[in-house]
Length: 116
Image (tube, rainbow, N blue to C red):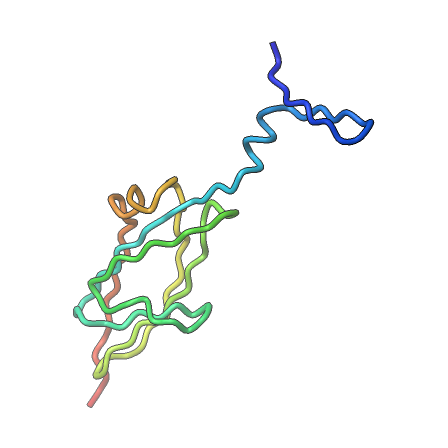
C-alpha cells in the first residue's frame, strides 16, 4: 500500500507522496574537524570568509542544510613559522552537532620555521 498525503486547494486536489513531504523538511547535516599542529598554538583561518576558526589544538563543527560535504580551505599562521594553506573535504555525515563533535575528522599540520 502506497502512503500519500492529499491536500485540498480550492477545487483542485493535489496528491503528493508522503516521502516527498518528509524530505522537504529542513534537515541539517553536521561535520566536525579536529585541527592539530606541530607546533601547537597555530592560528587557523577559514579562507572562505577570513574568520578565525581557533588556535590549535581546536575542534570545530560545521552545519549545512543542503550539502553532505564541505570543501575546506584554511590558512595557518604562527609567528616565526612559514604560513601554510591547506584544503580538504569535510564529510557532513551526522544529524546532530553532538554526534559530529563525538566523531571529529582529524586534520594534522606541520609548519616549518622561517629562516632567521
